[in-house]
Image 1 (tube, one colour):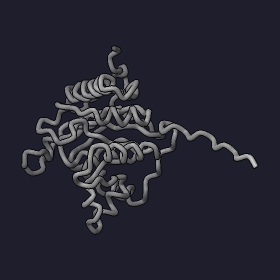
Image 2: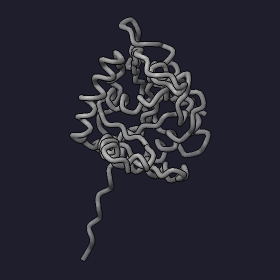
Image 3: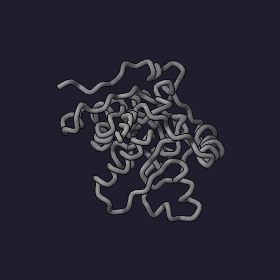
Image 4: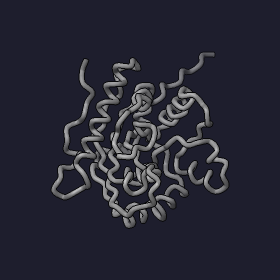
Length: 241
């Protein structure tokens, strides 16, 4: 008896994104919404650039611990972020961050394990968040970007979506100061195609394109009605070799 061949799986870019859980919706609208929109007078622009279905690597600058929940809320779809495994063992906190799309990585696990875990999320159709510097920056800019996000995009064959988070480093930065009620605005840039290969020059070219687009959006400052929305800017593509 002949076995029927299975149809080829859809590429990650065509997969439907997992639906937000009830816990995620409650946190987003009852907690993140008032904190972002009311307390920090949050605004977003460029939302037309967000693919609402399929996998995408969301790359952003990192200024404070506020950034992960603000990104998911501002983009209108859950964004999966890496989190320390011990946080998932904390009563109440663990189920909440898991429902919001966070995935655990054991302390001391190698970069390869983290990349594999993040790739699995992309293969499930998630928007997966990566902070380009890998850690919070006192000035809130992208200063020393790492190639991990580009490698993820190359492995899964999905685009990168640059996002600039303006003023979060001033609101709750790594300098140790308390919360400041400054406006936090989010500019969503234009998608960048995945690297042509996993070779380091291709990864570096895409990483540099993401860095330049994010810092350029940061240079525009807070959102104003007189500024050109990033949705109208030409796509930032990596330079050709």
